[in-house]
Image (cartoon, rainbow, N blue to C red; front, side, top):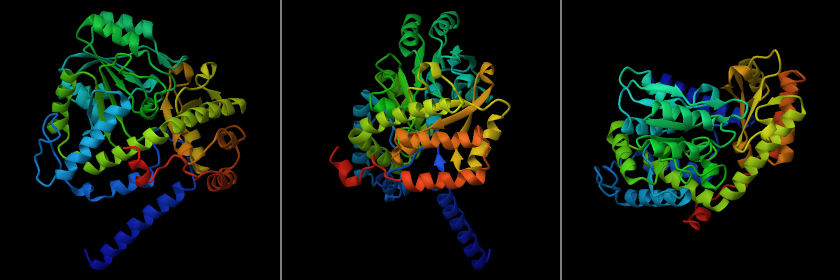
Length: 426
């Protein structure tokens, strides 16, 4: 390749990144699985750590394979201490490079091919990690869906307990990508203890930030053996995963599956950035998560008031950052999402029970909350959504209003901290 062609390709790449950032900066992002970083987190992700190795064996943070890690060890010890403190857990495993790998590590560590696993299925928003592993010929499992009540939008405790007693599963996996209301962890965990050999895993990816602030529910306190999660949804951290537990024997087995089976180099810049996020959550997490839940509930009420069908309306719409709506009669969920995107409103399609139409739109308010949204702003967001889906306005006319809202009402970033401010909470 000529030098000129290489320069042209680099210019094209940089131009595409700039175009992406400019476009997304003018959109309302309501994707429930994304968030924006504080400048501190972005700074740490771009630090020298991003190109370094710091592998360690087992659970000993000082048993390093590579030289040159004298400060890396201290960084990881700080991150480990912050994670255990914020989540009230005895043990933390921070090496998974994604939430999916965190969940996969737990399954691979604790189950064997042919074991029975219960997990939340598509209609309840389950991540279906066991089903995905089982789809591989390398690790077949007998996977059954956890009974789910689509109208209450949570796990059906009575039916789940009965199924556990019938099947005596090795693992039960709770959690959802459309996590509106808490799952019945205590009832499931109590039954697991009665069975004697069943491990309860709570996938908290979508509500980890709420858990960190003492909202939503406390899965480990309620009896879950392990909490697995990603680190970049309501928790506004870098993309990655973590595992928390109070059980020393279980976390030791899980760590053996994480390293070296699934993760060798565990992305040190992510660990440092995660530590910064945990400090941010210690300082501003209570106010941020309270406002997030208020905004989500306000969005649910405002959408319902404009004629949209909101899942869980009889329960107050949501207790998390997420709102789920059904597309208006006669509209397809994917088409509705495309129409909203054309107007600059970014959402995502989610699976719903057949009785609710099979598919809906999932909306998350965590990112606009970090950008300064209040319930009053959320009411304007609901009106823009209704203009597209109910009033069927042309996308071009709504786009200008979206850009004006983003420019004039968002961007305050009230919950961000500088590195210096974060250090005061170390």
